Length: 250
Length: 308
Image (cartoon, rainbow over the protein chains, first blue to last red):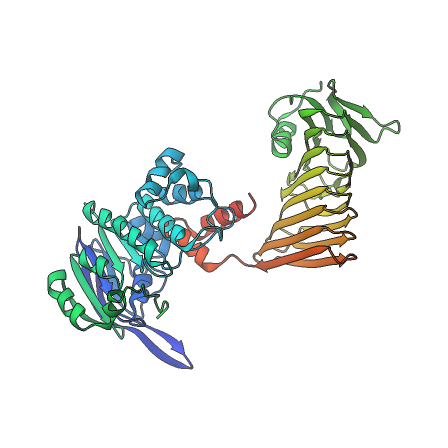
């Protein structure tokens, strides 16, 4: 279980403090698939980075399974069971897909075992296992490999920051099945996904709406989704069939 | 054959991946003298009359054979200059593994300057692997100054893999090549310097034949207070293709100077240079830290991959 208690975060811009996250409190229970949505620039990615430890809150505290992790480093949080998938996956010269999956798993997996993680994200494993995680891979391929590393790491809470960002609609349609698979096999872990996609929202247990850095709604899918579809601009784009590229940093 | 001690065996494994006597032709040079030499039916290794190096003759048409000529030095204060000439016959296809390991625990500088000349015959193909490695905690420096000269006949192919990852205090390397028609040269250099080390790598490649190509790629890491200079010049005198690339990571107070040099003397010469120098990207470190590595472990993984 992850608990955020009165989390605030701000950055300095033009000599002034700009508040990105304002007093957000949120609990992600075990075995739940929770989607955070909301307009671009609302603070979703920042929230994910705060959970992973990449950013530190100005005030408030973060608890993982009851343990206060607010002052813990990225590495310590990862070891305690937090997983984090980048919105824009990182490329490495010379590090192969197999290397990265081995690092994630924390042991020297056989190529066969590593391939299973690739297969589960819909990649034909033998074509990829020896490839470098560099600019030769497409955005969609990188996204899948990024997800495979998070699966290989094995986390009690995995955070995915806008898996749909930066890839074409066709690739994303296939990726949704990967998340549907994760939803089915969620036992003993929780998943937090930042997304604008209706199909992702549709498989959520709970939906959180973040706007202007504030939590404006949190409830079950049945409770929140109908309202969103009726009104929210966050949903509008995907109903028009356009995959939205996120605003990113805010 | 001379018996090797533990340090010599370690150096041999570092520079030539040798754990026992190699197959095929070889010459192992240890502390200034030959510690074992074997020629084969197709590859003849003979010492030069002046006693300062080897002539290696590979018969035309020799296929799938290899030559190992590693050098190890464990005596402090030893300095040597060696000339090895490789004559690769027409149509041959061979692998040559060289490399030098110096272990210097003493107070005096140890230096090995190896000048390798390659005469690559018509349509011959050679893969050359050279690794340099230093160890030992003496005050004496470990110095390696390799010179490589490559003369490529028509239609020949040479792939040079040159690696210096650790422990060499001072190095001046110079590689020159001339290419005739349809010859193809590929160079892959990997370099890491640390401490107060200094490494200079100069390339001077002249393309004299139509359809010939040269591709020189250097990946390097400069850490601590070390300094590197990569100076790559390609002269295209014909309808040819040339590419040089320097891709470098700097850490701590490391410094790197990359100097491009392209000279096109023919309207159909196509020459390119790329250079990028910078520190490890923060996002790369963060990604590996989210997988549970510490920052130092993440750095090591990134550098190992980069120099692989």
